Image 1 (cartoon, rainbow, N blue to C red):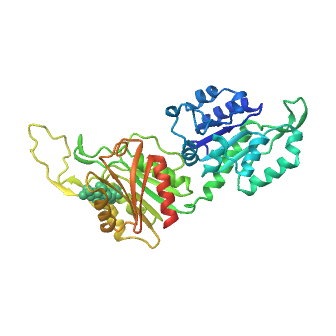
Image 2: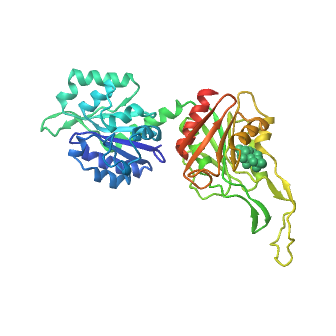
Image 3: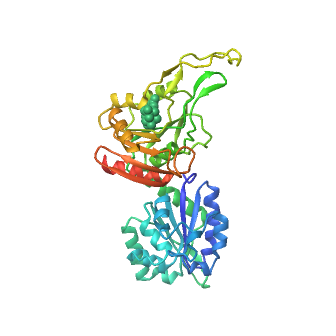
Amino acid sequence: MLSGKRIILGVTGGIAAYKAAFLLRALQKAGAEVRVTMTPAATRFVGTETFSSLSKHEVAVDVFPENESATESWTQHISWGEWADIFVIAPCTANTLAKIATGAADNMLTSTVLAARCPLLICPTMDGEMFASPAVQKNLDTVQEFGYHVLEPEEGYLASGLEGKGRLPETDLILEKCSAVLKKNKSEGPLSGKKVVVTAGPTREHIDPVRFISNPSSGKMGFAMAEAAAQMGAEVILIHGPISLSKPTGIATIEIESTQELFEQVQKHADADVVIMAAAVSDFSPEEVHAQKVKKDKADSSIKLKQTPDILAWLGDHKKREQVLIGFAMETENLLENAQAKLEKKKADWIIANSLNEDESGFESDKNKVHLIGKKDTIQIEGLKSDVARQTLSHIFKNS
Ligand code: CTP
């Protein structure tokens, strides 16, 4: 359940802060990507360097960092809040708990709590008497009413030298609770119970066994769409052409090579509730495919091509009631005009349009700048492809 998940680990100023380093390692071992935010008080127990070395990412402490260029910007709490699948605060002091219960946002950790779109797991850790105090108990009730999850502390020997209920639970228990929260969240997502087909990557049209017509699609955007749909609770089938990305966990994948193979697989799954055509489909294939390698001294100087089937247009013509069809448009000129024309011609519900002329977008990039064009509105989204995928799907399923 934790493999491939993006986790924010929040560390607050209690003696159990040192245990958070072990928790971070355990989450990574389980396959998760972890970023850490600490309260200023937490940095008095463990240095930020410990967590930045382990997480291989800068630790977020201040909303207004002194060295702005070293961080994304002062809006980092917003981007982290969108990025994460789960936010775990371990240990969580009585002070931070009180701030969460009242909506205070006086540091990066508490600001990120408010910005987070993912489930929050709070592991309160403090002295036994403090934990039993009416204020802490009331705050725990309040945060659970907000829908946040709480993992109660364990009984035992405490840093004060006293015995009581206040210890941070064992790492394995925190991991188990994270998995349970993610599982619950998945089945409650806006796409739960929905079948989503995503196509990704290029297709190849062979001329002979060693030569083909293709394009430089990396498949990154399609994979990001598949992962975003799965995180929203969908049962995802990812049909992809030849690419070098590792397979996403928990998502069924089907490999294809040619447009015809892609077409056949899409037709097989055309009963899906949502189809996302992110594949960069070859528009042409050679009329003749040679069974043996064509020797260069015998090759013709031209290759006769025929058009491949337009899969999105076929889906538009065979659209089921309530089905949502999402296409892409990759343009080098007249972006909005051409993309709008594709929306209408192919009878899609949405077109995600991007221009090859923009910096930091397009085939190989990890980022993208897109216009999401619907029948009623157009919005612009930019950022990491994973963020663009999530925001796109969130907008679509708020407006479908
Ligand atoms: N598409 C498709 N089948 C094709 C070609 C494209 O299903 N044979 C889909 C793509 O997956 C994308 C959308 O149609 O979702 C638009 O693809 P794009 O390559 O931008 O446009 P084309 O329709 O190929 O038109 P043109 O190349 O003239 O821009």
